[in-house]
Amino acid sequence: ETGVTQSPTHLIKTRGQQVTLRCSSQSGHNTVSWYQQALGQGPQFIFQYYREEENGRGNFPPRFSGLQFPNYSSELNVNALELDDSALYLCASSLEGVLGNTIYFGEGSWLTVV
Amino acid sequence: EDQVTQSPEALRLQEGESSSLNCSYTVSGLRGLFWYRQDPGKGPEFLFTLYSAGEEKEKERLKATLTKKESFLHITAPKPEDSATYLCAVQASNDMRFGAGTRLTVKP
Image (cartoon, each protein chain N blue to C red):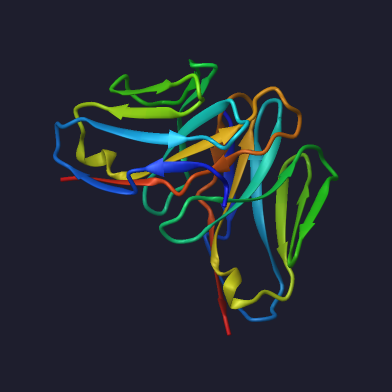
């Protein structure tokens, strides 16, 4: 049990719709990162939030956006959904600035776009 | 560009048959190399972080080692419950770069 919780666990959306995924980080962690994992592949970095600011971004288009709240929880928003957005979306939390910090993942949100 | 390559893609072992998984990497300024276990439909479960060449860490039947170019995850006398996908990731800046994983199956 990592203490990182994600919701919803599964959802189905239609192409062109918008989706919001939520993440509560582990107690004491101030940094949240989001990853996309397609079937049979390793997770790919979307972006990271630290102190409510985006602190790094992977190779994803602007229709992927996020927020971090004062309690360090976070949202991932995806607009104009495409079929290729179907994947497991993972949230990871860590304590930035601490040598030896460990990065813990939630169980993920399965998104299917039809 | 940071790259992580894991081999083999899939590995089938008999219970008790020890083996090693490989993670080769190229990265500028390694902050850490991570090993995770992932069961089907679940999020990655943290196993180890290694920071410098020569470092080793152990947990039950697993032992991770690190050199300047690769890391090994040694599995000693595996059991069927060790069946999972094992992911390796390197951290250089704010993100982690993952390999595609090794899918391990341990048959009783």
